[in-house]
Length: 78
Image (cartoon, rainbow, N blue to C red):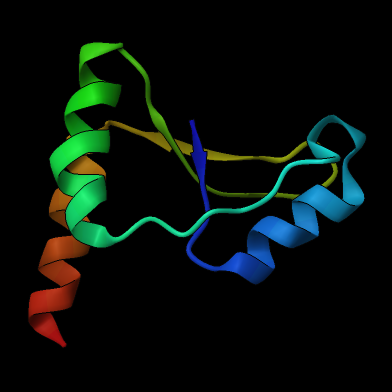
């Protein structure tokens, strides 16, 4: 499941790749991501696609809980 760290990153994919044409980026609050999305993605056996880019919209795919832990660690260090 792809997620982008900014609206501009998501829009770039939407504008440049026909497969994503017509999509609209939606912001998700961090608490909602942690409380709802992480458990749901985990239960469904899905990975998080982080800031996919390029002509193939490709990049890293990470376990949802790893994304949550890494971002929380980064937030605490700043």
